[in-house]
Image (cartoon, rainbow, N blue to C red; front, top):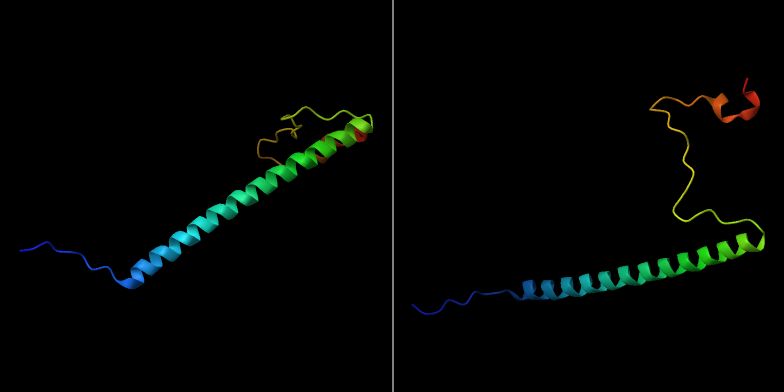
Length: 87
């Protein structure tokens, strides 16, 4: 018995080439989109901080934000957020 060479059909080869090109193109588009979004975010954040500094208001600390109080799954009391209705 001789060496058995598997037969690969032409359609499988073409599909593999087209699929590989598609995956490379998709990866390139993802990288380009992420770079664009990050660049735009940095520029927008810098402009926002510049406007806040120019108006005399200080920017909030990075990474910190005020969260609403916990309600433990219950509906919040609307009177709790209105300081004028406090007794």
